[in-house]
Length: 408
Ligand SMILES: *[C@@H]1O[C@H](CO)[C@@H](O)[C@H](O)[C@H]1NC(C)=O
Ligand SMILES: *[C@@H]1O[C@H](CO)[C@@H](O)[C@H](O)[C@H]1NC(C)=O
Ligand SMILES: *[C@@H]1O[C@H](CO)[C@@H](O)[C@H](O)[C@H]1NC(C)=O
Figure 1 (tube, rainbow, N blue to C red):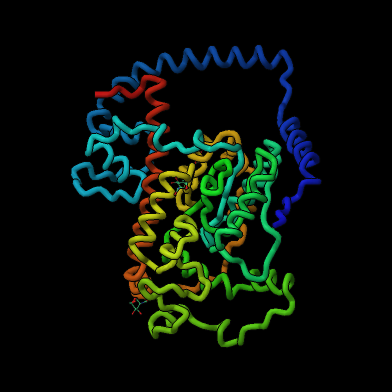
Figure 2 (figure 1 turned 45 degrees about the horizontal axis):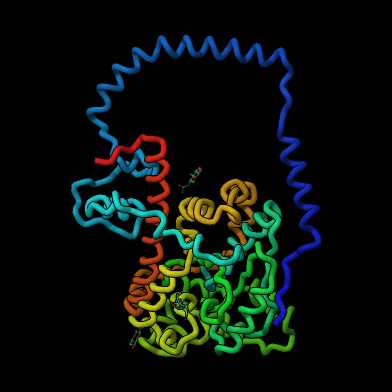
């Protein structure tokens, strides 16, 4: 088993580049200007003081109308159309999760330590067994940048013509051993199902991953395998692979689903699936044969347990800010500065592996698929709610620490 580093040689040079950039941004102020600025500041203060009195009384009037909820005080939303009277909260949004926790009295008992698996890791090594078609290449790009900043190494497997996510026990063990031999303070990234290091008597890494709406994922896969990017890469690496017929490239997704074309049938409990990674849960459930039947309750139960027990963070690009904040706070050694680097390299990160050729998929078609993905959708919501809880717990910590939030 050999793992390859993603660009060690250039690391030190790139850190120097970054330092130069930072140095150039620091603009020296001459002494005179400092005095000048101080003078302006004093004038402004005086000006503001005079106006504050006036503003204060006007604010009092407005306060009666506005009544900001505790939620907006947490900085969790920009949404002004919150229907507080609604009893059914959509828990699949950050706001809904907050409202749910609040209305059920769970908010006061939200315990960050039980949501944080990082301290249980026995090694400072990240295992990012990236789910296919969730934007993991974007996170890889960001991790590469973070690696230059914090000086950790990023590893992956050597490219193979066919990537297998399910491995027999002995191969899991080999892979775990190879990962275990990497430097402490490394990141391993690959499309592979969750590996239980404890089972092989090896120190437990920090597990991370991403999820995405399961229906959007399979649609994305359909166009990805037909895209020029994925095909160019594949044939460059493996020129002897047979080319698909033109008809296959031109297949229409809506038609494919509506006519029951085998490629677009998501049969319940089926163990096949044309290699389209339709089971997002599979990456979490693991290598057991119980994990394979599509949309099975058993597989989803196992996957949820593994997320809860092992994963430090399961984020989503559908909630970029929440995900970056949770990564930064729960795994600071690797992710500190993630927001800053994301903003600097945003264009490159966002466009990583993005497919621009994605024709319209009709609502009835999506609804047909959605009906067959019930358990997968349940798992996806479970991961999102956990992510929101982690975020809310952080915000509550912040607010309690500054005393701005008082427990009733
Ligand atoms: C949904 O599942 C049923 C039962 O397995 C199957 O007959 C049907 O073709 C599936 N529909 C889609 C759109 O995958
Ligand atoms: C990993 O394996 C150990 C030992 O077999 C077991 O106790 C633990 O529950 C497993 N972890 C998960 C997340 O299943
Ligand atoms: C994310 O946070 C940045 C500032 O940190 C803000 O400018 C941006 O609007 C936020 N995005 C969303 C979708 O909330």
